[in-house]
Each structure stands twice: as C-alpha cells, then as structure tokens.
Image (cartoon, rainbow, N blue to C red):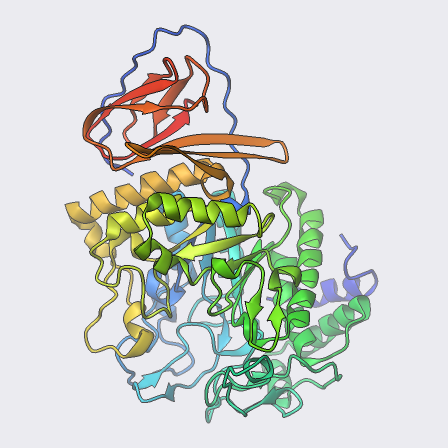
Length: 565
C-alpha cells in the first residue's frame, strides 16, 4: 500500500497534513388534466443519517480471482464454512460494475476488515478455523492476499465512488489475531493475554481479553514503545522496512502523538483514508477500548479525509465529513446517548461516533406494529440523538438470533428495515433469502455461508429481490425515509409521511402499507400541493393530487409516493 521512496522523501520535506430490477411495471397511467409544466426535481444529496448500507463478508460474497483462493499455505482441513471459500475484493468490484448495488438502492458499502490476517488456523472445538472473516489482524499495513491486493482495494474505492457508493472500512483496534506457531504473540508492552473479560464493570470490559488466546492491545497505554520485532522482521523481509519507518516518523512528528500501541494502529488505519479516500469506519468492539482512544482515531481520520479531499478535488463526492459507525455490543436505541457499564456511563457519541449499531431493532421489529415502531424511532432520533443516528439490521455475521432466522418473513423484513427511521443495514443475502441455517456448521459459521447467487434463477427469489430493490431505491432517492420526521396520516388505510428539512435540503414522501389490491384512495394531508403529479415508486402508477387526495390503481398492497421527477 505504500508510496514509492521518492514520494516519502518529498513528504519528509513538507508538512504531513498540508502537502497537497427488473419486475414488469404496470402500464403508466395518469388521471390528471393539469397542463402546468412540473418543477424540476433535483437529485437529493447523500445524507449519512438516511443511508442504505450493504454489509458483506468478502470471502463469501463473490469470487473475482480464483488465483488467490488459497494463499499463505492455508491448506489445513477446516470445520464447515471455517476456511477461505474464495471470495475477494475483485468479486465485489464486479458486482458494483454490474449494477447489483445500484439496483438495490445501496449508497454505502461495508465489508469485513481486509488487512493481513494471521497465517495459521486455530481450533476452538469447531474444527480448524482460518481468519476468513478478517477480524484476526497480523499486519494492519498490508492487504491479506486471500482478499486481494492494495491495488484491488484502491480500484474498489474508485469504482464505488464512481457509482455513488461510499465505503465504510471495518477497523479493529482492540486486539491482534490469536497466537499460533506461525503468528507469535507481540511484546507485553503492546498486548495483554489475561485476564479474560467478565463484564462486571467498566474495567472488566475494557482492560481484558475478549476470549482466550486473543491478545488485547493495551489501548490505555500512553507509553512510547518500539515496534514488535516480529513486525520489523516481516517488513524487512518484504523489502519495505525503510518506507514504513519513514512514514511513522512523519506521522508522529506532525501529529505530536506518542508512539503508544494505539497510536501506531491509528496511523496504520488512517493511511487508508489519507491514501484512498475511504469515507468512514465501522469500528469493531467499541466498548472494549477506552473512549479517548476512539476520539483520537476519529480526529485523525477526519484530518486524513480532509487531506485526501484537498489532494483529489475531482474525486470528492460531497461535503460530508468522515463518518464513524460503532459496534457497541448490547447498545439499543432506548439507551439513547449512553452505554451503562454498571459503575460508569459513557457517551460514545461525544467521543467521535456518529452512529451506533442498534442491537435492539430486531426485537422492536418483532414486537411492534409499523406505526409504533416508526414513531418511536423518529421521536428518539429527533430528540435525544439529533445529528446522530443508529443503524438497524435484521441479520448479521455474529448475531445468532436474527429477526427472521428461518427466512419466513422476508417481505416483512425488507419493509420494516428499509422504512424504519435510522440507517438501514442489509446483510448480504437478506435480499435473496440466503439460508441462515446450514447443515454441519457450528456457531456463527451458519450465518456466514456463500452468497446464494444461484437462487436468482428462481422466480420466487426474483420477486423477493424486486421488493427489496423497490424499497431500497426509494430510500436511496429520499433522505426523508431514514433521516426525516415521521407522521401518521391515517390508521386505516395505514398511511404516513416522512419529511426532511435541514441544511437547505427538503424532501417529503408518503407511504401506505397493507392496502387492498386494485384502486385505493389516500389522503395527502397537505404534504403535496393541489395538482401535483405523484408517482407510486412501487408500481409506477402516476396520478395527481385532487382535493388533498390521490387515487392509485395497482396490484400491490404497498404504495410509495414521490413527486414526479
């Protein structure tokens, strides 16, 4: 990932931060006699609080390069779905270029960490397991060859940006990978190997190891430390030791940060932002690291993003700052701004985070009807979490109790996830009903099967995907869905509006659910003016507002109303 030596020399002479779907639609119909020319509707700007994020495991999504299927002598027999399956960065690029994400309304992409992982496997009673998931780092400065190359990652970011998709890089600062014969433990001034976390209070959740044999980075330390000998020897053998050391000198000189373990990792992680234009982080294991360390990471990432924008003005997508999303296990929207350790409450939103993954959503989605769910989330986001947000999901790579494990509520999953206020997170295969129950797997491996591309040959899967696509593209086109205020218009038929009006951006939509097929009449509640031509994004049917009412004739039970573009 590194610049050439001449570039490093040049950098040394200047300041580090100042050098510069297709389902057949109904025939479009119009019931308006209005002859006025409709106003020009501009594309709405991207707003993180209303984003539609797609999360995937690179190794399980799409294989774009079979030559890297087996690397670093990772050849041991493994437990079911516990080895590298062949998916890679090139496979993701192919799907972006094919328009798969665009058709799904995705405007932000999150994939697992792709930095170099430990080389050997571990056996935790589930058979040998390799680090296909990306959370067992060995070297933060290099891309794991099983996922691809730095050049591949650079291309992925470029192609994603060209398609209006932001990149959320998954980052780990809490721990290294497990210790194996090929992957020795780092020095004790870098990591601790005990005690194991008990979660009784703040200290027993932060100053400890998550599980056995997962060395914990001493992120609380402000002591200057030397680089681990294992890492120095590795860089030397790869012919890049001088470049790495020079870059570290530049970083620590210009930032004034101490050479503590966390600050080395912060340098390595922000390099990807500074060099590639990564748009945000998804931060792993938030509650296991001191909040001050996260604040420093966010500060340095924002500086790195600003530097990249300055150097690449023609590649800048918008004026958004760097975005930081946190995985704070156990956090739910009801907690609002604070996480309670028992003896201490921490406001992570005040320590660099814009968003927290909402582990509560699946329970709310199970227990609540649409109106109670939507109005609750809108109220909290517009009171306790103004300017922040939460990310909702129905399934993930490590949640053994998803909203719909048997995939029997796939349409409801899409409707609730994509229409609930907050950021939506589609986990790969939610949209195609990829099975979450795989025979002979143990633990979370059942959640991490290969993407079921073959099922797209089935009519049933095509119809389901079309439902996700229509809702997803509607959400993408309208920041009011995730970031706007919710207001019920009618209980029967259930109709509501979402309106967003901030920072010069205005956007309004009307949605109706559980409707009868055929003709339906919906109140507009003065959201749109008399005579305005509206389009039902779901069916394609057009009509105009007459006496604060619109009539739609479609075969569907859902209506997604927007002003005609």
